[in-house]
Length: 133
Image 1: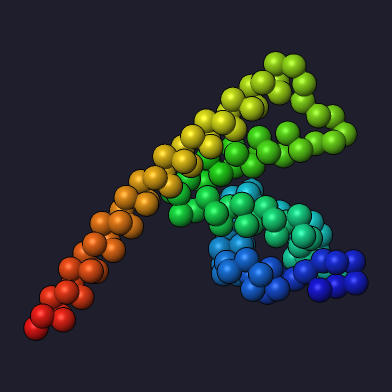
Image 2: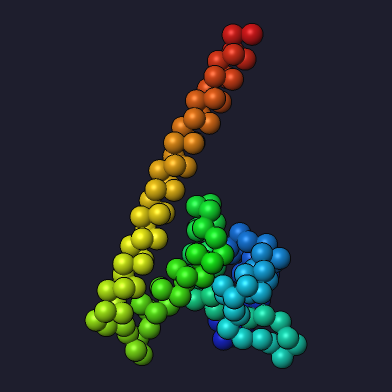
């Protein structure tokens, strides 16, 4: 970590479990942009950038598209703006959109749980057959 609390891409990759290639791809598609560049041109990331990458990483197993990820990040960015927080109809609209993503995430988690239960049942069947062989 640099003196200013910034990290190079290798440390970010290690902390997030994402590959360098994936982090660079997310930058290319505009999901996360390094907060700065070193004098040598190296990408520098902050804790906030790492948190953003972790949100993206958590969305991936739920099959959210890059566009959905971008939209959700824009919503949370807008809701988190301290300098000009949304109010009135904009706030209500952002909360509705965020709630729709929550409902989608909940449904996809339930689907994954059902698939995992089937996979575990299959693995149990295999173990039982091997034990009886």
